[in-house]
Length: 580
Image (cartoon, rainbow, N blue to C red):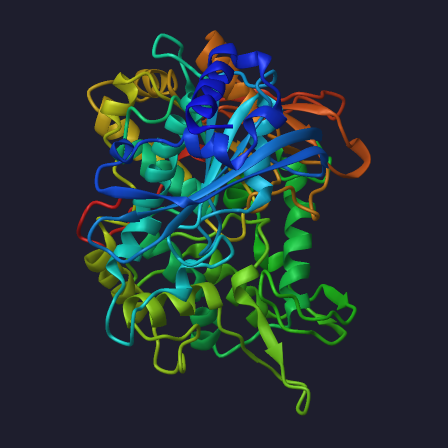
């Protein structure tokens, strides 16, 4: 086929839209002919020689927590681009449904930890909803290369382009290119609305907020879980448990802390009015439960092998009784970081969350338990604050609570404009008609649940501070809704509270809200494990809290409880600037 004939053929396919098949659109020449223009993103050049297109048919995706089971077929289009003036190369990938399945939707996805994408896991979530879905490698070298592989450039020399790409730029560029590619591939004219969505959790949640705050007209609806924003605080927070153990000179066997958690769950479970193995009211647990009641209770754990993620060392069999020192460590962690003058620097996890950051390691020769650095926290300090090419600190000797405070402030100085991601004035996004579903597990053991509450409260105060508390929440909740998920862990259901619901259909809820005006009040959720597998549940919208009238009642009442609401708010008086 001559070039002129090929141009006519692809134009005909574009014009017929749904008449084309997945095989028709999934060829490298077709994808190359429908690439976005370089002007889609100012200052880039697309490498047309890098384009690939590969069709995949009838793949089953199952046991995912962000979307239900499905069978999908798609075309994976990848290509690279560079920033003019930089010798870089950024790869993006897009999964396209068949034209007959396409429903005028685009889904941007993010990553987790220090990864800017979640691989096939997140991108597949767009296909069941007829959306093209995209991800980026951030320019870090490959889709499997994480951010810490390219920072710093050398000891003492930061890689600022990589910082900005990770912070917000790469997701933005991937989204703009993806929306343009989608319109070109399916022949969408300017009169047809292409709905644009975002979905991500943890680092992916922070990335979602980075787009809403900076590019308000880019996304119609964002589904954001447990965001890792307030970055300088969040990353140092991972080291706090280590410094508590070091300061109190007690390194609990992991089984001791695990049993404290189990006993906390058992004691606090009924406080929500329903005994079902789920602590739906961690606020009541915080107000009423005396953790000292666990002292003297026995514990036993079998030996376990090391795990790569979350990083944890191998442990021998353990048995004993919960000690006063173990409870002191747990209580100090739950109280949150305070400096030497007793001022609150940051807050910690809710009671009923596990003490994941407080891992200790066993000396096989002496049998003693000792310090095990939190790699998430240690790498942040060593690599991103000290600019050393290392993933652990040489030592934590001499590190105090004041040191942690100072590291937080240093991170603010260095990265407030790129990584903090807590800008509270979302007026441009609201005026553009954007919608947000923000959710966070109440028993999250990686990102404090109160972190999400604080941001929602910051937006409320900044945007609607002239209204009463109830009126301002009502105004905010018209377009930005926060849900705390009973029993849920970090971006997932919780094996310690298996009957807890999980909001697996968030993207479907968001699509109905944006496209049909079906505004959610409670959030749809499903029990994804245990004896109630598959059962539907509803989650209360903040600031209302769940309370059951009896064990026989399936759904809770959503009640207003001022003392409970107050327990989520902290005066971070150790930091002299506003902390949004």
